[in-house]
Length: 259
Image 1: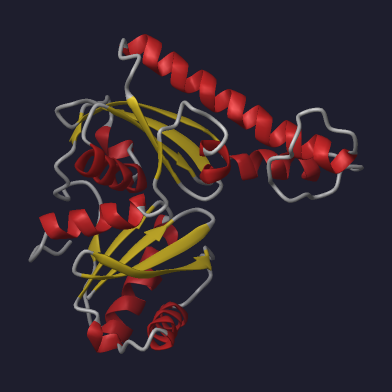
Image 2: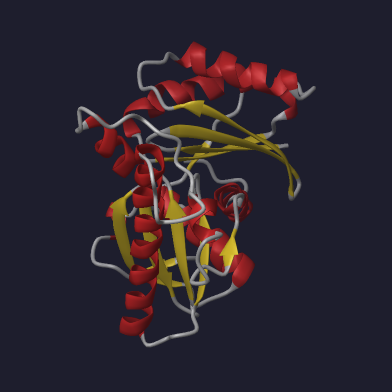
């Protein structure tokens, strides 16, 4: 079995694969101040809740945008699973051509999503990840990653709204039935969600205009992305398992190679 791990700024997502079947996913909050034992015990206990033993895990692959916790996390994997994980980074075989100015600056999470989207849906594509930050990445028919855009995620926008205003409460992020809000809660929800839908549609349309491919397919993933994807025709596919499958695909390309 294969354990895939996506370490983001907000959450750590773990997935367990048996061959190509995703058996389940788990989430834990991203906290840098954890020891290798804490990470290792947590992962071991997750496996046990699924009726799996640590020795059932034959390989581990990790993508991380939080370098400060990698020492403890990697050592926890080694100590409790007895596996040295593959760490996705510069030099990892992915099959994606990074044709931008500074390839080493591209987050591994973006590359993982591009691998899954390209191999699953073909190119050209716009790939959107609605995470802590929202990223819009363009991959061409030949697998070249040629442009990317980064925006504050919808949760960052929401936190700014109620953290920086004394009278506004924290609210659930969801799409109200109408943009014509009649109370404080729904007015905030409408502003956040409808505003983000508008931003998303404008960016997609502008990218299509500048690349000259008006019918390019758009694939989305990540957190609150389904709320946005369900509300616009500009996104054709929402794939909640995109990152997990991207890590699996990269592992398959790197079998026998350890970073």
